[in-house]
Image (cartoon, rainbow over all chains, first blue to last red; front, side, top):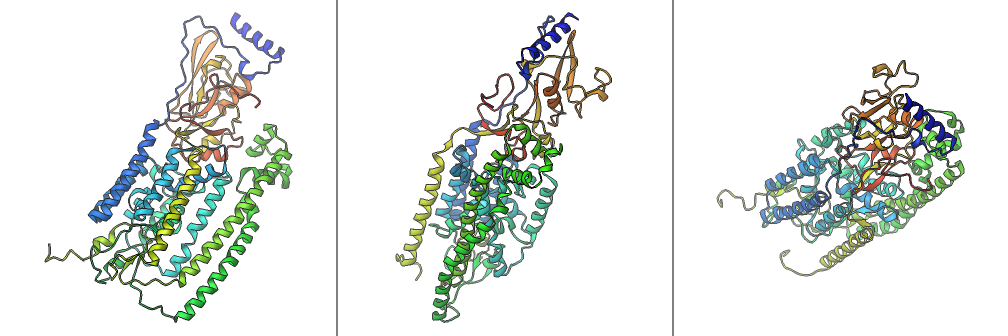
Length: 424
Length: 191
């Protein structure tokens, strides 16, 4: 009983002193029964050297990929290597860390002085790009767990018309631009949030993401690698690198015999048939079109920038500060809504509405610049796509499109050259 | 024929582009490496910024959440009438389920000596709803508080709870000091 009185007294005293220190409301008792206080269980995070092991695994996988593609020319080896990556980076590492998401870490690091990027994230961004610059998109074939999963599920690929492919191919650029904009403004990481496959690796996700994941898997049965071709923002950068890569997978080990087997084997429509020696239309009209498109390019860039700047208000509403400031300005009555957690947390934080509005305005200005650059970038992409329509490249053989080819090696398997039964 | 190694205009343009792309990647990587750390980062809740809104239970990519209640025993008053254990206006001070604040009965109450009781969190049952944290902060010492358990956390690139935390209480902390447990971790000055 005495102790209880003492505790209450101490409580009253602490209030009387006006210490107001919530933690010390009830002092820690002095136990007489020899009670030993337990320590809270605080398990350590993943061991740091294991993070560096991930980088090592990535490099080894990419080195092996180059070997399998250029020396062994074996689809089987590539397939098994991709299964390993699916297991390691997908189901063991649960899709985090991944090169696609690392775009956002790099963007955040470049624009936010207080964010320090982990070396592993930077390595996962740079290493696949460097490899692609030399050997094509081998990363997509063997190291990316998302790619590996989709590649395994290609069942009945349908051929998409080139127009549809080109139009859908615009989406990754937009996704890349938005991801960089949102990451650079510190808004959110949309690539990670809307990754349809990470829920499958974790066997746990929200309802919408489960639907999206299953939807993509089903779609992937018929449209091969739907995420890689029509969404992946990292694929855009890899495509740029691959287009100018020093070496690239070659379909045939020797002379192409124009048998068309490879073009049929490619589920991604990435193999281009031989092009005639002359463009279909006359050279003059081709040059005229090129000039028109080249003239159109700056107009598209300016128009894109203008449209982007018009969209900045809409885009900036993705930022929580802007959204909250907007809500408080338009619906001041939410201050009395006890269920609105964001508003209540803001009110109890002691910040004034003016401070919040000021922060939101600064953020919106960031978005104004960012959205303008994003729009201009999209204009540039559209212009370059037009120009690519008229740039004529002569091809004598069936060749992979260097920027779209994932180096999966199916075509090598199908190429009959050097596999004649009488030579075996 | 195509086999002849003639260094033509197209090859020149291609290697030029390759060089510029390599320089671009190098520049981006170089700018970023100036801000890189060899340290890894993990997510953790600042217990002094937490407003016990309850989103940690719902917004984690894991179900149940990787956020669990941690008991900072250093600060506990070992009260009989525990604001974190009992619902306000409980019928009696007992371990009866109807008297417990915790929706999953994850807090174990153990008699030590008169009039003190020890409260231990059963991590298996805890869902990180922060109901006890709110009770303890309102009526007690605030020794119960939420932490992200790194044995469970997948360390997502962007924590999905952090994105929605109304008080921005979840931040990246160095993996070498991955917990912000009250007692050891004190409130930063000026906040």
